[in-house]
Length: 99
Image (cartoon, rainbow, N blue to C red; front, side, top):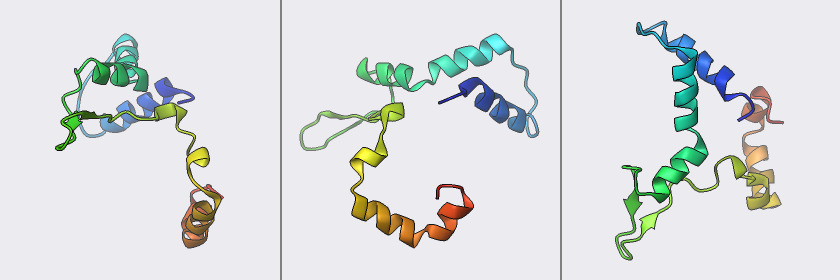
């Protein structure tokens, strides 16, 4: 979220170890724009997202792109659950720098 261009270039450089392809900065910037949460959410709203799924009972489309970058999980997860997760996965969370 903070620097999508930098992160995307990391992916591109990694992939170049396995496949040969050329890309311009303009192409990469276009890709970054097209795969942004806002663009994908917009495509979903316009029924241009082929991965849409539908509720079998109501036949209504189930929203795939829900909270995205606005996802403030800390506001959605109660403190008891958060504490339980931190307790059970303390070693892994410390290792990954989450605690």
